[in-house]
Amino acid sequence: MSDAAFVVLEGGDGVGTTTHTKRLFDSLRRSGRAVHATREPSDGPIGVQIRQILSGRLVVPGPTGPRAPDWRTMALLFAADRMDHNDATILPQCGEGTVVLSDRYYHSSVAYQSITGGGAQATVDWVKEINRHARRPDLTLVLDVPDEVSERRRIERRGGRELYDDRGLQSQLAAFYRSMGAHFPGERIVWIDAHRPVEEVAREILEETLRVVGA
Image (cartoon, rainbow, N blue to C red; front, top):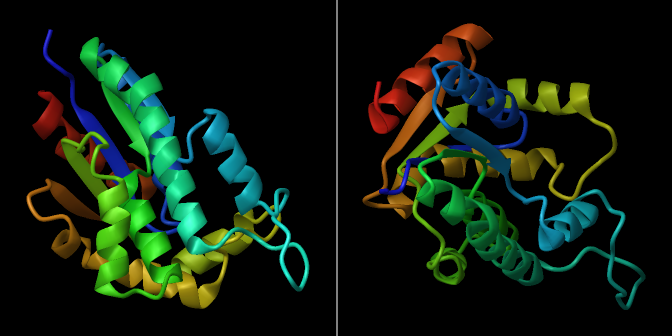
């Protein structure tokens, strides 16, 4: 049996990747396909640790008091979680003929860690290098909304401030995602205008996915 498709939904915080991963999963399952939805950080042991860091529940000592790990440590943690995610979930599921959907993938690492690391091309290249063994997606759907819309959504859903919950950083991330193709040449990337009614956005996402997984 050949590998089934691996589809990733990407974008900054508040663009709707979680909502539309679930909707896409439901649509594909209703059509009778074998489909599995997952996310990053994953639900594996390293992913759980990362989520605790993002929420501020896990910190490391520093000269001025407890702090979050620096961008290099975060990049390495995300890369380790991603390889565990590949071995435990993505590769086995795809190998069994199941379409795998992931809410975020290595594109987020390149975006978040390269920007928090200063944004130099050498930083981008290093983050890409430590993720080079991860399975390449067959399709990456980048959801985009105006910055003020994503900010409003983050405020509305906020259960507490997270590590990357900064307006300036989120604006830089949005700009990165809009030009993301330059950093991932050869990958199949489709940008989706997610500032429309949810059903309309979901329909376009499904149509783009069916072009890869088959109608």
